Image (cartoon, rainbow, N blue to C red; front, side, top):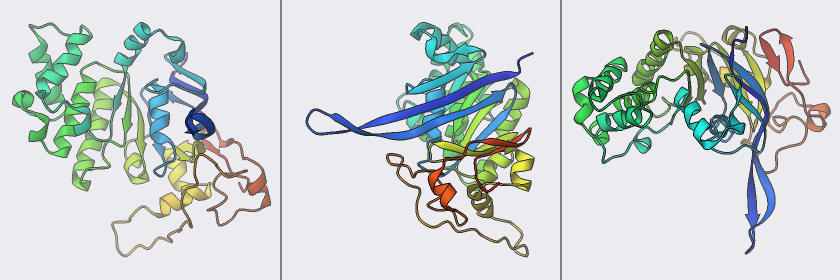
Length: 321
């Protein structure tokens, strides 16, 4: 029995860089450059990396919000890029996207009850007679008062607005949600509440997640497996336990060393990376991390490492492991 909900194979997304009056393409931004992984049914999969690593582009390319350059995306054994617009619309009911900024994804002139109800009516998941009851149910499911349905987005806090967009996504009864840094703009206490909400919804509705974040401490509490992304490629992929107990890639070790420890008596050796993430227009040869890696040698600069299995649940792309 196939337990895979989503399977991504050698996915690439290049953005052309044009120049001159005729917009002649002079190079490409290699935002996603040959990524492969899968997400099982009911699994929460974390994707972590610095800003500019290509995480958001990967999430949007998976759901065909932006077209791929090459590769394959299969959702429930269906090739997403072979579908017509009509069939793609059916898939998108089951695969929802939650944006980082909830306010920008809500119509400021539309009451939130109308925003949620509109999605239900458009996809024939409610009638005019019962849409209000369903809206109230999903608001309460996401920890909001049902009376909020008549309010506008500007009347809510950031945490409440995030709950609203989660409720709108949940209203379509999805199997899979791409959550694009949904807590990065929130206070730490509110972050914990939203993470707990995602966890509760996962249990109640049997959801699968692709949870995108730049913060390993956030995905640690929610995700079963975690992929570390750097400059368009995955450099390490492991179960939560193996990644935090036995990180192998130097970039992963640096990210883990940056996680704050609440106990001031415990000291962690911080690994400070030199320089900034290189340009995806002209990525370094060999290992893309070698320009910032303290252990890099001539092999790292010349040969691109491939993801290899260290155990059945742990992969790493590094010449030094």
